[in-house]
Amino acid sequence: MSAAHRPSPWLTRRRVLGLGALAAVPAVTLAVRGARSPDAPGAGAAPAPAVSSQPPTSAPALRVVTDGGGPVPFVAGKAMLGSYVGLKGKTLEQSLRLRRQQLGRDQRIVNLFYDWTDILLSAAPELPARTVPMISWAGTKYADITSGASDALIARAARRVARYGKPVMLRFAWEMNGGWFEWGGAKNGGHSEGYVKSWRRIHKIFRDAGVRNASWVWSPNWNSSPTAAWNTPQSYYPGDAYVDWVGVSGYNLHRESPEALFDGIYQLYAAKKPIVVTEVGAVDRGGRTKADWITVFDQWVQDRPGVGAVVWFDTDTHPGYDEKWRVDTDPQSLAAYREMATGPRFSG
Image (cartoon, rainbow, N blue to C red):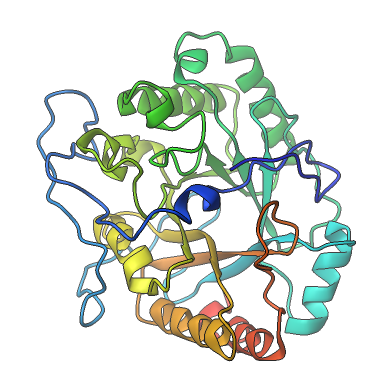
């Protein structure tokens, strides 16, 4: 789903997540047999094992990274908590002020969405001093990038990010394993290697432009649509040298547990990259259902030391959805979120 949306003065369009597509998609396995190796997305790579999205009986016993993250560093034992904030009738600055009053703290990350042709930020006066912008930069067809036709546009974006000067998280072409965005493999002939080539070309142009303040966030969806060997998250992985954080989007739409949504990506990548939950929210089914899910999610993060950041989808302006994703839809949900936000795990 996508729609014109203007929650901040920097944004010419909000490319919304694939909630519309996922609403009709049942929980499925994250990977299927025959997936390509994460570090070798081209033809002929060795198959990767299937990874089930079914929740395990306990937290996976994995070796996880203790550092990394690039210019936005991962701090072992801590996690940054932020959000995409879009509240009806409020500017971004007003929305951030309200959340500061409710939570007693600022957002550590604020997710800002930009279209492919938008002018990326070079200043962010609305953001608190310690807040890191996460630039969710929409992609385009792979051929528009790999052909070199967009090199000037990419170089312009690189100069803007470099001019900002302070650390940013750059989340390019997210949810590429879904079927709803033009930069997904499903809309590019099923050729996930084109995504990898696009990512690496952009990475090189940024490096050549002297960008040293960007942490590169590679961010698939928690499940793939369609489910095919070429469309597993691993097939789109650009390689360790091109990624600083591994992200994942997942929403409690069909009573999914946090384990079902996020453990697949966690098990695949937490041993070599810090994990950021780049988009997350919960449907309110009445009573304490939303509050309880937030509490369960909080515990999931507590049990996963490789998670270094969480970015909530905190809005009531999502087109086409009656569900209000904001964290304060009822007092119980706000209290659960505040307890999570003020706990020691999220003091990063």
